[in-house]
Length: 266
Image (cartoon, rainbow, N blue to C red):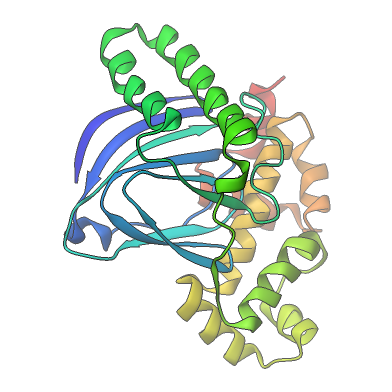
């Protein structure tokens, strides 16, 4: 992996990275509380986001909503180069451009959006950090506005859906996230065996269903806590009547006391 440029600042991240096939095996399947914007500078990748799969190629833009599980694999021997911008939903208004999915795929090679991404590295190398962050968020908003005004009809709407059971499972989890805690409850709701669901879920999404459910809950919990809701109240809203259990899960994922996150936002 080669990092051409990178910046991490609070709820804003920028990176320009070249991945090779060797590094790809070390990439974690993940979700996060930020909006992620990815521009494919070079290469071809197969992306999985929630229960959808698609191939993105040179010049394609991918926009992923917060809390959506996703991962990619390089589809050929060519290195994969991308520019990534991650930002908090309150800093850039993305509206409904990702509807009805949790993401969008837009071919935009050599157009206005392509030109916007070409500016970013120039600003990164030539502007003070605080100025660059302001420009980065402004450019991200400009990209969204371009999508809304000039490219709404160009968004790719045909994606490969995974096994129907995975689609049902992901939809059920998203709708009922705080109303259950175990994989057994999920399998019962879907009328399948727990063992079959675990095996299929791990095969298709590359993550066990228990971990998927827990991390989604904790990411939303962190969002609520950093927005000013007390951790004990969030614990109950997330379905954890035992605060110690909630605390341990939160610490394991984020490495910080939930009360510290709460106080930092006061």
